[in-house]
Length: 70
Image (cartoon, rainbow, N blue to C red):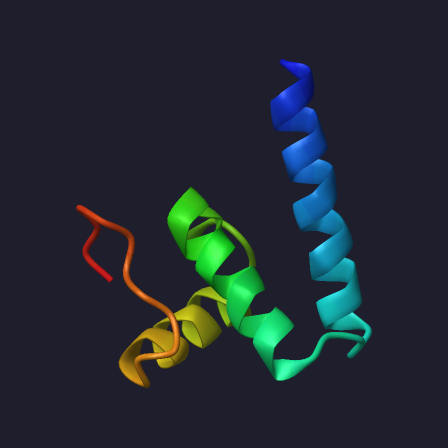
């Protein structure tokens, strides 16, 4: 793996851990889920992430991935 990918994944994992611990603001949660949708990870993580992403998309807080179905 290249270093940029590893750094990006490490940053996303840190954000996920902060989310799970309840340490993110609403704005940070929206940013995290936008990143998860854009990367395709929202649908690959446990079901609650996909459901939360779908809810945020329905509410217009997160935008669907370009070229995606959500």
